[in-house]
Image 1: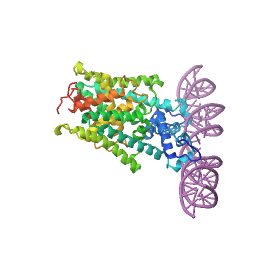
Image 2: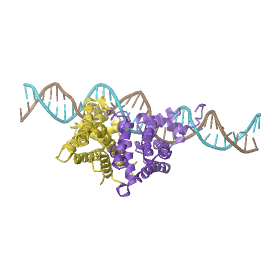
Image 3: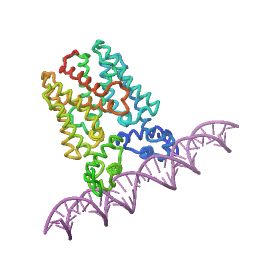
Image 4: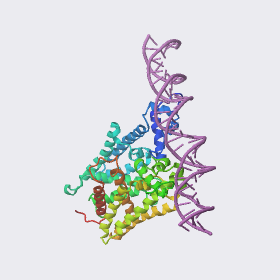
Length: 205
Length: 205
DNA sequence: TGTACATCAGTGAACGCGCGTTCACTGATGTAC
DNA sequence: TGTACATCAGTGAACGCGCGTTCACTGATGTAC
């Protein structure tokens, strides 16, 4: 990154980083390859040494995002010797943290509209992301009597949807800014009520 | 719409309709004014008779969306003499229906990143949309003992986030298509569990 | 250590293209008489 | 009913611009000897 001359050093990653900033600022479809090149300090033509086009650049950003995401989530859930319940709540917080700290990645992953199946690596990483969420749901749902237990995939889809909704509506700039609650507070309380509904928390508080 | 010559008849609405289709296809930032004009059967310059630019066109689409949305939601919740609980579940279904039937409007409203405050009419309509959801939450939360009742705004934010998350992740084309559940099923069961957590449904099923 | 050479990442010029925006215009519509 | 005229919605030509993509090139780096 420091010494720069004719050769960039690590342009591939430089372009991904540039794209991430631009995605964050203008959305996944709101920037051009030339902008990304300029931001990386390079001629538009140089991009083609590393990516076939826009799509592939965004896919790489999404790929890196999924890797960070599944790492963080796995660590939040499985990292310590907490109870499954605490670990699960930790997981929700990690989700929100990720969306906060890596907005460009988050948008590339979930809002860019790219198909996960154009790239096997990406498909694998995305699969791992949803698996890791589902593992958390499976572990926790073991605490529910079997006959009252919803399918773990459904459980995890609910939580995922709630997290995503909170991120999109209340942790971003514009639209849902009208609520007086913090996203963290909203997510934590929402998950709490949901878990109570599953019998995983006492009915009263 | 039928007789067409030099004058379009209702170009303003024609442009909005064109924009809605394009938003649905390519996202709120993925289309150009010229495309919308072409789709409406008109020269790009004609757009400027009706809108100052892209932003204003999208704002109009969002405005119309909010009006349809708040109508549908209000009707679903308040329309009949059902119990508050049934009415509330009806409301969730109406949300999903709206997102299904009016994807362009939905995206213009919640995914376009336009600021609601650039246009007073839009701000009002958006306000009404969230109010109508909140009214439903208020009515239902009256059934909870006051000391265990979360603020209605929080309640409604939870439900809204869940609905939005289901729409974005599981009722759209690509990313979350991997789940085996229907969005309706997912939303209904999620709301059910959540309401049980609030003590609005019996703990057992 | 020094030299010659292969490699290949990035350049810069070039292209055709569609965009946003402006402008004087034109022709359809409505209305006053 | 007919005519003259005002209005104004949409035209089409024009502009400058930045984009994506290609191409032969150049110059930095690494390595074989």
